[in-house]
Image (cartoon, rainbow, N blue to C red; front, side):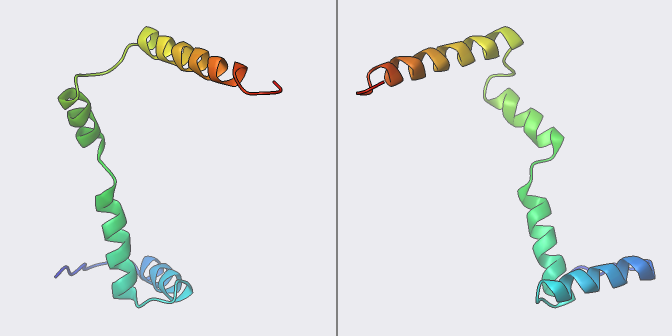
Length: 83
């Protein structure tokens, strides 16, 4: 259970209006918003995951991968009949 105190009236009213527009109770609407928030990785989580996977690619590595993918695509397209 979560309770939020001292929410300014204008924020409370805006949240109630959004919940109503979504056809939800305020509690259900806020629960949905919280689920969506926790589904998104924080910057710290993104960095930790990148390190776990071997770190960041350099700009040169990224460009090389793009060029390789384009060459593969162009080779596939060249084999299509009528092109």
